Length: 135
Image (cartoon, rainbow, N blue to C red; front, side, top):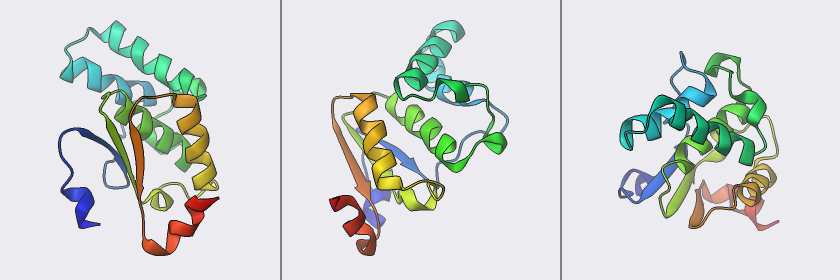
């Protein structure tokens, strides 16, 4: 897992060690990226965040705060926060640590199909979990 820590700036990450801001809604957690990194206005940043949640099929979680989310809703929010960065690589670090409420290889495949993004999605996981991704 040391390789995950050494990834460059061209990589967006989703992982257990990258928590959401608990006092913010899913929408606000995602909107922080365009708001502060790309200097968009609040309305435009929120619109981009809502569009991404809708694309992922989870528009209904926009108002939920971290403590009110299920593990899969939290993952979708973290994923949207990573996707809004628009980087060429997305690395999902040990998804089983976060996604313990759904069959996660299938759940991630469904999200990847819905996201329709350009670039690569990579899953870094323990070697004993690799068989889960060969379905």
